[in-house]
Image (cartoon, rainbow, N blue to C red; front, side, top):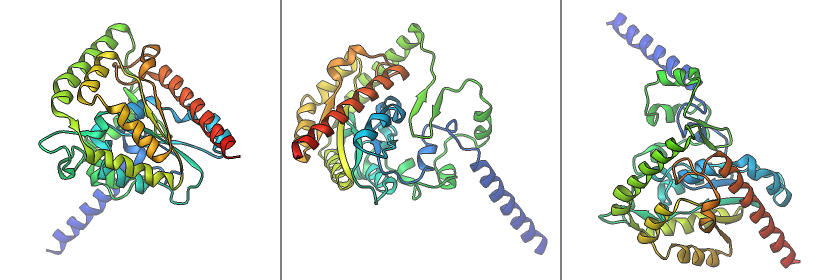
Amino acid sequence: MKKFLLRILLFAVLLAVCCYLYSFLGDGYSDEYYLRVTTPKQSAMIIGVSRAAQGLQPEALNEKLNTVYPGTHIYNFAFSLGLSAYGPVYYKAIQQKLDESAKNSVFILEVTPWSIAAAPPDPNDTSVFEERNRALDQLHFFNLSPNIEYLFKCYANPYVNLLLNKMNSNPFYLLHDDGWLEIKAPMDSAAIKRREEGMIFLYKNDFYPRYKFSSKRLEYLEKTIALLKKHGDVYMVRLPIIPEVKKLETEIMSQFDDTINTVAKKYNLAYFNFMDSAGMFSYVDGVHLDKSSGKRVSEDIEDLVSKHKLASQNKAQ
């Protein structure tokens, strides 16, 4: 009996050591989310779904933002539609990630019709929102490095992949330390066309038939704005997409821009809508901006935010 207990104890110790060692292998190649829950609390953030995660680049935003928001190091805390649509789960994660001492900071909230929509039978029943019981809902710790809780509860791949991903010389993505998710997909015209067709099929046959406007998600968008406005200025952004997907978005929520403009007016903040200039940019798949266009849009947002802030300061004088 004594030997048996000793073996169990030894096994438990070895298992704990292995888990701890493997946790140090976690990096930007581990998966699309891990690093975002290993960094410290943040005083300036990008909030949204995968369009923001892939499209908005903190490095391209920070330089000019520092002229109007001194010391700004904006962090990309956007995830994906299945994890970070506006609702109680994402709101809790933002609360956990936010540096409560932040003052005079800046927050960029990406908005889409899908991030304030949900699937029936009741698009306002938060208990059955898609993000329930998934990664952000399971976590208690959002600022630990290494984050063993995430790797134990939320990492979807075999743990050996943590090592194999480090050895991969041709990775599909890289999650940067500032939260930006860089996609390294083939960018020849045929590959882009295939991905566009796949994305249009997904939106047309999955999202479009199921998703309906959710007043509850809109309520949580407003709660998120109210939370962040205590610590600085909030700006809302709608990123560009190809016309085929825009058409579907208009059909499920024709008054989307009016709704967002109403929210912007209510909270006295700016809304930057890039939909009318969608043809000026290039995409990985028709929905997510590619690296060069993401940089351009980030720089455009940087200019718009800076001009808006300076105008506000001059008006107040």
